[in-house]
Length: 375
Ligand SMILES: Cc1cc2nc3c(=O)[nH]c(=O)nc-3n(C[C@H](O)[C@H](O)[C@H](O)COP(=O)(O)O)c2cc1C
Image (tube, rainbow, N blue to C red):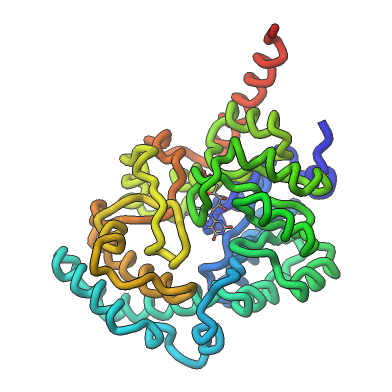
């Protein structure tokens, strides 16, 4: 079967791994898949460190970077980045709401030093969740030629970004949750789209992967490759994606339970305890709809009397500082981090190599089984 992305990028296995963790990106890439680093939470300085680290470990293999370029965002916060503390742009009502909630729940403050560090890291990282923030991150990417793929989430990349990436022969992708997004993204000049179904962790729409993928392939007239995302954690699921016409899969949640993942043991335990139905769609993390672990914190934002959600990046600046306190206090009942429905099948720590091996061997078995079917 032809695989246009494989021909262009030279990976062995059509398994794309989205992760904010450099160890996962490097390990997947070394294991023959294609690692993509989620860059939106890094400052440009930190991204430089992460990419240099990956460069050193992947040999000659290419890898990718994902940036968030939202269509709707807080323009004042975008302009204020680097000039003002983004926390100052968060309305008092929102800060008071979270302070009251955490006090009622008995979650302590962070120690002052840690609070200062977390505060600065979050403002610098979350500030990247605007078009100009993404441009700053892509300037760093330009210094790392092993990055052969750049993917934009939450919107088609703007024309200047497409032109710049194209001039550097970077393969451009975009995340989409509806066929009409894919049409817009193709018109914007992307080389491939990732059709992400509602079951996925992270920002997600309403349509399931099974329904979305063939609709997206039709919408782009099969002129550009489509990857399938949302609900992929084992080989039989990958076989289903290939059957739908996808040229590979793009997974996020499955890597969170690996020993390479950056999550703390407390956080991993929260994932291993969760069922598929605990991965719900809420807006409290970024202001946009994110599938995440349900908790008393996520539900507090849905209750009557909660303030309205802020646009990116401000909701994320507020929520991430709260999350840092929740993690330090190890309060599983308040922990809400992005997770797809496949979280219900993750029960113990594994490794990237093991996940890659299991996926590929079950894919081979499934294809063999299907080949022998007499219908
Ligand atoms: C913890 C986490 C963070 C995510 N952050 C982003 C992001 O910053 N940019 C993005 O394009 N997708 C993000 N996603 C979505 C993934 O790219 C991917 O599409 C999704 O995880 C696929 O579905 P799955 O969770 O069922 O594997 C995130 C997913 C998770 C689980």
